[in-house]
Length: 498
Image (spheres, rainbow, N blue to C red):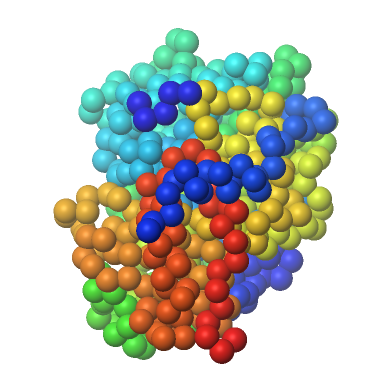
């Protein structure tokens, strides 16, 4: 293995409308600026709520997210380093960037993780005397050819996950239920009127909380809802019956990036034809259906929080809420999808409620999704056997480094879909990436172009910015350990004349 050792949500208009450096150099800089591991006054329970494919503006429709924002800390510049389901989930489990854990695609990628990293986050939490539970969608490919459906990954005391025959079906399909010691039994979801898989997930999660409290056990629960990912047949997600059609009057935001007028400045891999009327109808229908699905997910979050309160453990539980990646709804002429370095795909705010996260606090410095496993470990005073490539959000509630560089990458099937492959860096102000499989690069100044419609690559006013980010990317794109933190690099130059 490569490693042996809007508004009160903080996602309003500002979200879209706000030689090579050696890895050793980056590591030294990180050591100088990164705070030591966060140590809570006492170990806390951890509930990690993870949704699937959420566009950042959609969070404002969720009442439970508004509560999380009031009661905890919003990390509004939370960046997903590899915006695709499978690598993002593998990063949550390993604490490593995709180029290090190598789980970069979707089909059968669970096998890669299982063989390369058999012991991950739940094992480390068990070692810290936590009771561990997983509910929902695991890593893509779980329960497919090459691994038995009855296999349960190491570290889970309670485990309920969709098999490949149950992902995104919402009202039918199969799931595996069991634990790491005894394996799992395979069952079909109940075939009854008005059934929705979220009902089983809620019941299992709340039962896990209640039984853990009854047994006086500290617990770590990962609630991994499939919502609002598209339904298995490709249409919008299927919500619970009471949520169908509740957003009939909504449509996707018409930002300057929507059906972008002029894309001639983009790199070759990003060039697309304009959207037509049928495309736009599809986008708006998908937007409404996704919002309906989020109403169902919102109900689940509320149920989990009410259970924590009823069991008397809300004040000793850290709740972390985010999604695996963002999603496009017509921006940059993409009718749907992720896998891009644009804000719509990589910017997914994170909310945390807990004793070390001030209520109503908004952090504007960039953070990484790799900071989340570090945060979970810090809440439980648990240790990983290798260097986690992010650092705890507990240490970042007042901000850490406004000049932090977050590495970006997309590495899957570059020989088949080369336009999806890139390496880049995102800062508080700039976004720069190179499409290494198709050629070309893009540079955006988010301070005056939050919608990323004007590529500054080759602009003489940004020559110094471009040169420095290109140089830094040489050191960041293959980072390892603390060199992935992207801190201690100092302030980037401003454009000429500013």
